[in-house]
Length: 165
Image (cartoon, rainbow, N blue to C red; front, side, top):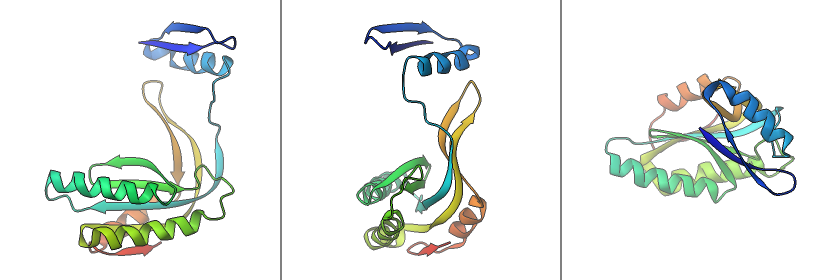
């Protein structure tokens, strides 16, 4: 795999990296002055939704509408997996006093606009924003406490409902 990065003087440099050289690449990118997110702990304002997944065309249309609604209320889409979407507001733990209000607005708008095609759980959770993975696959995002219970609640709800957890 080849990677291109810029040096401090603005020149491009190409680096050949195999899977075992991933850590070396991260170190080199950091040394070149690229932004590397750091681990942070705080409270995450999250929203988890599922759209009805009876047909692919409906899922695509409803996901597009849901993602727009979340982004229009300053939400960050963290993951889309099948018919599920995970979003955070004020991520990663910025001093954004409006984050909770945006989360409420987003949950309300989602149910108003998608009706019985969506179910939503949302709330605040202790979290850590950090890298997760291996040298072969790495992702940066929040690790939410007690996320399994929020997912279980979502799956027990009827479509057309929202609940703060």
